[in-house]
Image (cartoon, rainbow, N blue to C red; front, side):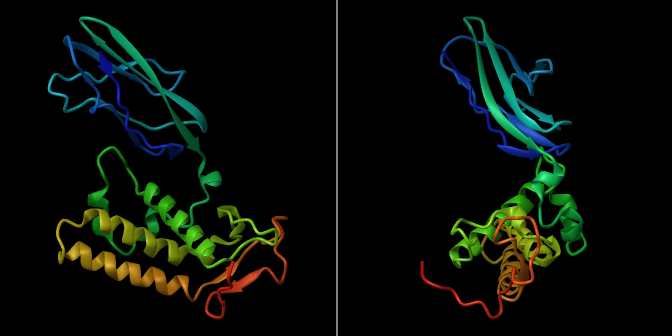
Length: 231
């Protein structure tokens, strides 16, 4: 039998490099003769076959947004198996990230040398930082007038959270680089965690609480004076 395992990001920005990794796929009988990946329906299959399984992956960048289907096909001397996987591609405008690589490289230029293989940016970390910020607001019971969670687009001016996002991203990046307790990357991760928390507790946010896309005078929140209320 052929067992296909595809490791891929679920959400990627247009033109951002991503890796489609099928190196964890395996067979229990026969001999593999071909491993192919089709990154989307409009593309061809690309052979990624390598006998030592060190390169069963395809690096790709999507030129258009939308829901895409990745197709993986493995051929052996006994059979052929094809499996489809989903990936969503989003524009920079719709992604609405609160920071980008220029923000973190201006502080830590060394990070240009630590971009993970299969990527050409840290946009995934900026996206994770955005999720952490929105989760923080939810934990503090900062919600819309109708009781729903604040969504990413409801922060009207990303400059209100740019520094918060920048330091949160740096924390996440350095946490990934930590090898052992006490190394310099651990120290930096802790430093940027503290800076992110500092900005979280003293930011002035302009939020579209009524979701009408219009900034009213009352739709602002000073995190320095905000008091959490019980749910």
